[in-house]
Length: 594
Image 1 (cartoon, helix red, strand yellow):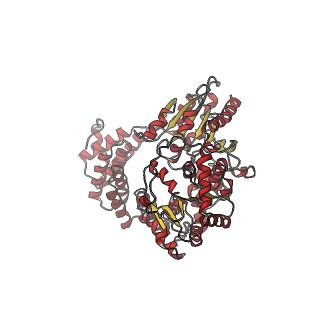
Image 2 (cartoon, rainbow, N blue to C red):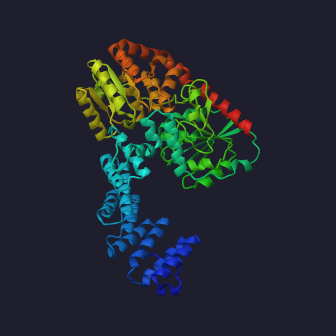
Image 3 (cartoon, rainbow, N blue to C red):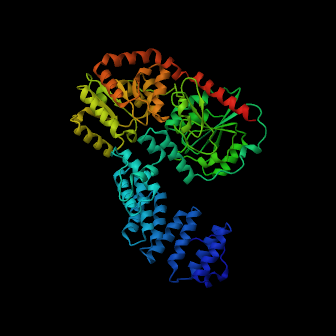
């Protein structure tokens, strides 16, 4: 094993406790490489009974120093001497995962589960397996691991939130199914914000979930705002967009024109992002639309905030909120005098330092403002920007997707985790009442597909009336909307980007509007496009209207005609005006601060 630095001559004479003490002193002094060298020198001359402990400690240091190959050697050497050394097995699994040896990592953690390790270590092994299996999209296995973990220890909110969301992804209803000693209350408290948005339109529950996340996960913000020490504002107003999703992501697909259409005589546009670099056209277009691009990958939150403050940003727009991969710790430093939530999290984040949220009066009615930690910035027409330059493939034939030419086609291309039992059963009742109609869906995974088919069986709906669409490239995805007669929206997690895509392609969408921002998104879009009569407020009205339209195909055709003639000229797709509306608000807020 390679030596990092020169080793003192007396190293080999140290006892194991003395060695551990000296290495700890070096680590606390910020010298991990010297501590690793100390261990390596001792191992070169000693073969004491506790050698496996020294090897384990060395492995952890080498991992810290990003020397994973050497760390793996150290862990394996420790395990040759102590095969049931659970801590080494856990850490070895992480090293294996990082180098892509996923099956070996899973098997290594399984060894911990199978040993007589203390329950805490077995919990770690179950949770590691569950997390990796979820990343590998092996959802049933991932769920089983988390269920086993929760049976060992129910008070694990991280495990609970993944368990619930895994069931949502698989259309396993009810998603919040108690397991072991986990109570319904614990399931509610432990559910993630994203999962809660799919479970309930209660804005108070969403606020509670966001507040719990912030309390448990976000560092306490510094007392002084970082921007306060900066110079007085001058020149063009500087807008900074903060995100790790500036690529082929729902947010990255919506915002290119927002960035491109900013008035450069008044505004300078910065992107602060940790998106993985790629040469994909969408990523490159987004980068070209920025005046300045600052990479935050590998930069800690405090340094990232300092970079934002040094850039003199007047308005910082957070495009992620509490979604996967977000970095809310940056916002707590208050690097800009105005910090705004937009698009990535359609709801309150409860984040300290995020004072505003871009909205319209449909998604946040005035009487619902009390459920938002942010103050709404009301745009006059619609909250959502979109992209008028989306590439669209030629219109396909229905037969190319297995769709009948002579039947009414309902469709929902929303992600499966947005499907709830109440809504899916409503869809089955709609099919019962519209003879020969079909429902065209995405099946994100085989378990979800099987569960949807079983629900169809329970309603005496022939399985062939559920037609599953494959994943395709964005141009083909957009083109095939034209084959559907009516899009059925999900509730309480409405379509956002998907609703915009459907309306852009001239296909009407029926929605149910609830109480939360996310359950009112499609209603906002329908209002702006000029089709408010497709907004319902109860599940019964949603069902009745879907049946009425399905039984009268000419009505669906009239909606399509309207969208073909007027949709793209409506306020929904008037991007220059929408960008001016946003700029007007940002300018007002920026000038009021400095």
